[in-house]
Length: 356
Figure 1 (cartoon, helix red, strand yellow):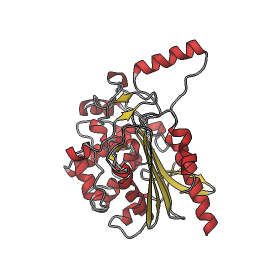
Figure 2: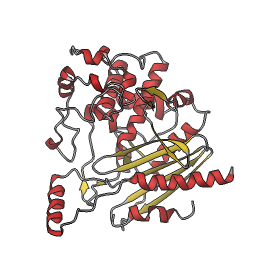
Figure 3: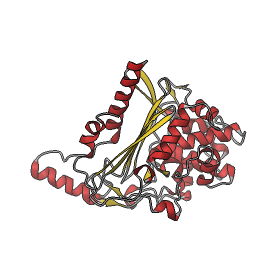
């Protein structure tokens, strides 16, 4: 793609440890691009470097639900209370697995008993099965059912339920239903030793190296690691109808009218140049990701970065506040990769529309 450097220059500046991998996908073609500010060059091909993809995991969890529904192991209309053992809470009998996948259960972004300050650099690692059960025992968001409320705890609970129903680990479900059929050999929650050698260090918006995240029992909300080559294959599968899970992917593309808006299994929707695109992004304390596709024009994009758009480190917050006090100015924030991704996608869409 011409002038790609101009689109990414604002994002890449002042990030000395940056690895930015980009995949541009058309129905029958994938192009890879990379930008690296690290003076120490890596022998690993950029398209095979592994990143935390954060909340893009939620798309995969929703597709797992649809695949297990296809096999009649669960129904997306099953009530959540059916699968939460040892908890008697009528609210859980009012929401469904579909509610969890579409963020319409009313559940908040995080459980009220999830204390991030226990481990700010790895905030999900300390949240246990017992914590989840305790939260669900008293949760009541009945008044918000049907309204969109983005929920990590909701999709994390969905992944947890799917694992219990199947008696399988999340990675086993991924391999069976998605990564093996689509030949995505570099996508997993738990990496093996070979994959670990290709797993990049993550950096906060300040440039500080931060620990990798462990999503623990909420891995279905954001635990996957992947490469731009694997996610490009995933986007390509969503654009084509000749892959083993095409019918399930197509179902995830269908809007569902819930409350007063259209929702999707896992996906978000936005418009560029009057074209509707399916998308999701992700962010951990050291990584930022963006994925989008346009079915009508059969194009898509993946961006993976080993820089976060925020810092979870408490000391960074104090330093930023000190700078604000000294300079009387707001400290600069990290930039989400979505902005860059949308600019590139808009250029691709414009190019495709001019050809058609």
